[in-house]
Length: 249
Ligand code: ADP
Ligand code: MG
Picture 1 (cartoon, protein in one colour):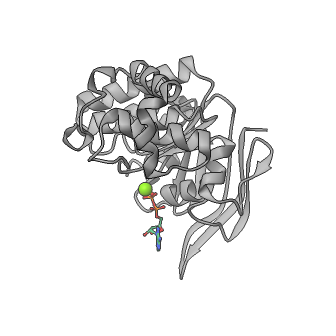
Picture 2 (cartoon, helix red, strand yellow):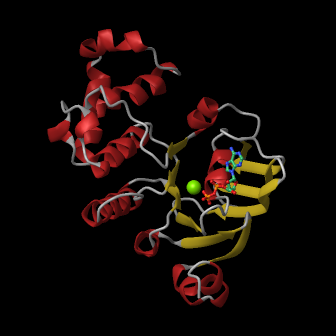
């Protein structure tokens, strides 16, 4: 049994079957990549895991508990965090202020804007946020406004905002999309470090095969809403169906 068990999940948008009977088992402390062409249903699947979408059929179990019917914040409190396809941070706030949002949310169950009035008194939370910024090599930027940062730094901050919640499952939707090569390589290094130093399971959607093959323990190929094949990176590389459906050969 994996920490995440997806069974026969289906999702329709009107006449479009975005997901049809998806089965997926993600082993604890592994990195499981989900690849597939545009429109394959990868983001839809992730949205079904975090409560943003409700599947029409099937079940999603996390650590033996069903996530279906729970609200996104409840699923988050079960230990699932998600990095979105486009960074969701507040550009007007500094790096440290952004970090405080999940810290407050984790402690109080929700975040209230007036919480900032008391930021200076929240030494324990500030310390926790700063430690995480040290861990991801961003402590020098803690007072920088995030709007002007590079995509790579925004992504790094967003990952730190997820990690500070101490999730057991981290979901990443195209974490290197739109990044320059150097930022992509930094992201690979950061994710490798997370994999080696924290007890976190990761499910990662990724287009860049260099990223996938650098990190994944197992790979599921999704095509037209259905898993085509699931295997180790070595086996996936040589799989004729994958070469045909995904690499366009
Ligand atoms: P991927 O992330 O693999 O590129 P998506 O999960 O975003 O694919 O989309 C799968 C299919 O579902 C696509 O055909 C997309 O247009 C469609 N789709 C996704 N979200 C919606 C939505 N909210 N309403 C209608 N159609 C959607
Ligand atoms: Mg997508």
